[in-house]
Image 1 (cartoon, rainbow, N blue to C red):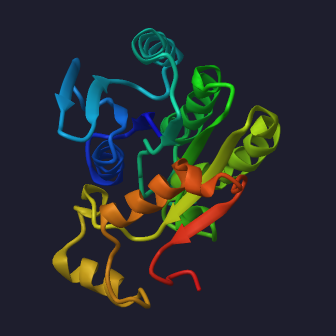
Image 2 (spheres, rainbow, N blue to C red; image 1 turned 180 degrees about the vertical axis):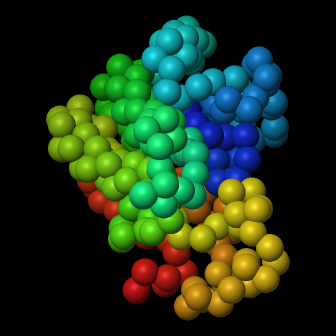
Length: 237
């Protein structure tokens, strides 16, 4: 893999993915609305170009697509990682709250996949959608978030079938509890209780998710598409 786009790359899983890709010599276009403007960071191995970006904005995708095409010619991989988590139960959810989560998580994934296809070469590429174990079961307390992740599962499978003729593979990753800022509002006691509920007795590290994503974006997974990979320490067994 030579060039990749990673969304939601300012921290947590996204930052770990961007760093993992760059460590193998790839050029990474790291996108996040938390970034200011555009900056570049080169290392001995790879190169990271960071840009301010809203995944739910079609115009932003057009802008980045033009930039990537002009500078790099094509991309080999897209990782749709950007997401917002708003823990609101079903009966308390508002239309505005539901739409806000859906626009980032679901619409952002759709726009990303659609933008990536014309940027990929004739010999294909890989799309990895970062989902969640919240999209594998009835996940109470975060209705909009869980719903969006269930939707991304379906989007992944339909896109995998429709893009197979272009040699573009599409897969989904379902992380469980990961030690990222998204869990930062929990107390140390709550985090300990969460870890105790995991058979491996700990939270995942972002780097562990990144390594799985790296595999699915690499030639080593060239016969895998439309599949789902759970990485949760056994929590959903």
